[in-house]
Image 1 (tube, rainbow, N blue to C red):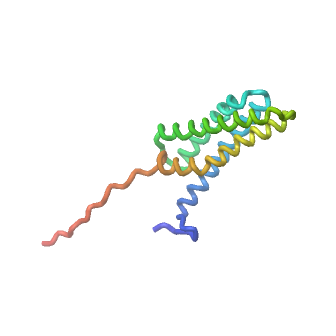
Image 2 (cartoon, rainbow, N blue to C red; image 1 turned 45 degrees about the vertical axis):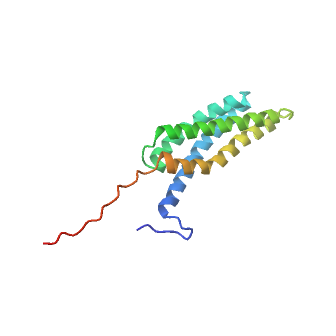
Length: 153
């Protein structure tokens, strides 16, 4: 029997959420650093997004697969979700980059565009958790147990 917290979540679900959060923090730090460095040194926002996505995708997949869910997931849904996230981030950062062009300070531009990259993934954090949990790393449904009738002799 699972212990249920006051919020109605089992301890297992809370542990899963904590592990997912920790994995996401690692991937976010790696990805954010890659994006900020690329953009600072003059890489176009869309290219910086792709580089940052690759930099964060590897630790994110490994940590989610092994540490968070502890099993292999379906690769096609995982790929669709993370590529969809990357495309969303590329659109947001490209639009932000376009909007901040009148700003004269390169440091401020970098901060704003990098912030839009982080904000995109902050919003997608919960969406990705639900999709990973329900689609990618979902446990297979247990086979129904047929009612057994006692044998009388």
